[in-house]
Length: 208
Image 1: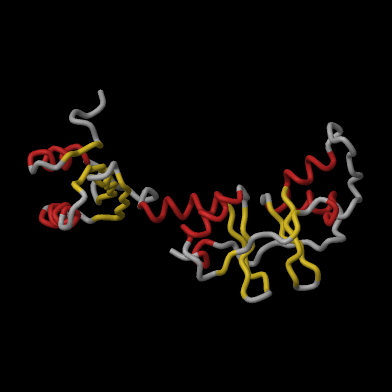
Image 2: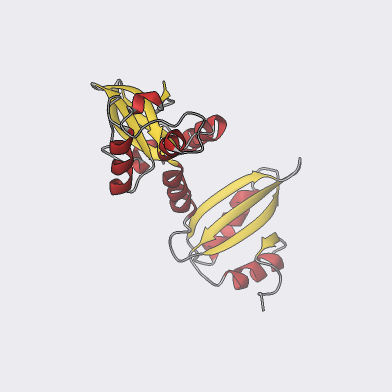
């Protein structure tokens, strides 16, 4: 999945001279939290609802009047994404930089924006949790052929695999999380255990 698949387009933007009051009104009307700031067509910053609240709060050291321009509080030279970037790369950048959005650029033209919520939606789609499915978590030995053995097990039982996620579990094992085309994952887990797979989820007995 790429950034172009999840970005909001067109992005709602403001200009450096837009007032804090007007920017806050736009955020409320559009139900959004981030506004790219354009000087002509050039991206020069990003302003967030948090920036606006902090700048105008009576608790601020020097509160700004609502008619102040967003240029006074925007974050300059913001990080950006390309529409062809993988969503996991965008997520890593946002996590590393501790930022809540990435404007999406095509050369020097703003074409969209992605936020943390968009990445969460992407995660739901990539893992198949947004459709009826069952969850399985299996610890596999970290050696060739083990994942193929697991997927063959599902295929022989006529079960669709909606998604597979894997991550290391120590030096010699890999945790594998599957979303499969049945909500009765307990029965599948029982069959997996009989086939000598180490099933971590669901537990051996259904919850009471």
